[in-house]
Length: 206
Image 1 (cartoon, rainbow, N blue to C red):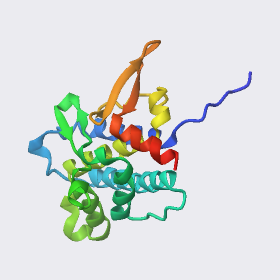
Image 2: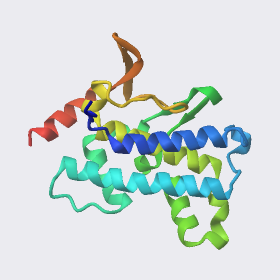
Image 3: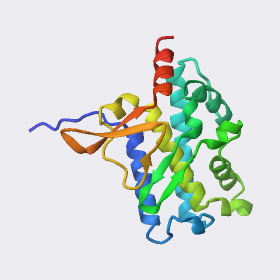
């Protein structure tokens, strides 16, 4: 019997691994506002993994939008991605189990890099003085930021229910709409808000 293989969105699988990391973390540190400043070696690891994947995916989004893009840093990612997806500024990610709403890209609205991105840079290069930046809040925001980028990077897969399985904790909020497949109610379908969808189609026709 031959083994058949279907091409999977590997960045999604990486995100699911980070989602699972938070599930394990939550057994020891409650994801609540009172604990947002809590930091640890494990959170530093998860924060670094999430931020590194954000860098990879953001670069690929820019190249997908413009094959000639040479974007390789956060402020350039902002310029190129927000030009097509302006709703990213207000993108929300929910963690219903703990009653949290995250806005990982809100800083882009002020033309500033996300706090969690700066935190990862600090922990990476100045850990001896900025280790406390590897906090629960920055870790959650970094993973939420990756989640948002993946929904922009995989629009067709999202519409077709191919971003599966679902994350255990993280849920997409506006500007994304979620539904489920009629024949597979456990599979989430993601679609873009109308403004971002129009901009995406215009970009594809350039």
